[in-house]
Amino acid sequence: MKRIVLALAAATALTASAAIAADLPPGPAPYYGAPATGYNWAGFYAGLNAGYEWGKVTNTAGNPSGLAGGVQAGYNWQSGQFVFGGETDIQLSGADDTFAPYKFSNPWFGTLRARAGYAINNILFYGTLGLAYGDLKGQLNGVDETKTEFGWTGGLGMEVGLAPNWSAKVEYLYMDLGSRTFSITGTDDALRASMLRFGVNYHF
Image (tube, one colour):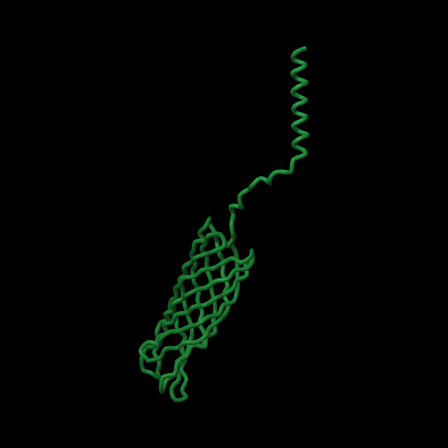
């Protein structure tokens, strides 16, 4: 008989507790941490860029400078926070300089580069190194002479993921095009230039 009374008392207490709990406002939702995957940098991308180019033509007094812009495309692989891949771009440039009686300009250039970097979620810091090529054009008293030169380029950049498919970047590149002999100067002339440019990419 005593056991039955204790069981009934326990059941009554549990029922009362449940009823009181039902009348209370709900507590805060349980906390779950953010997904560990972070921003995904892997895959193909393509975009546009624009910036400023300034440099020097070796063995002359020429210092071409001007606006430049173009398109880029590449592919990224990602392993944890490490991102690596390749990128190519082609640029139109308004960099030129006139120093009597000469004028030198760099109408266009392109690069083919490796990229490697470290991602902190949607922010990617990277370095880049590879091939550079482009035209160096000289003019003297109405005579034009253009040489396509090949060399190397390297630089640093930062890219920020703005949305799953869009990112923006800022990048500094140094370009050293190998020298070619120009008849109008009688010397081997090369273009050595720096570029600061901004761009946007769409990730497929």
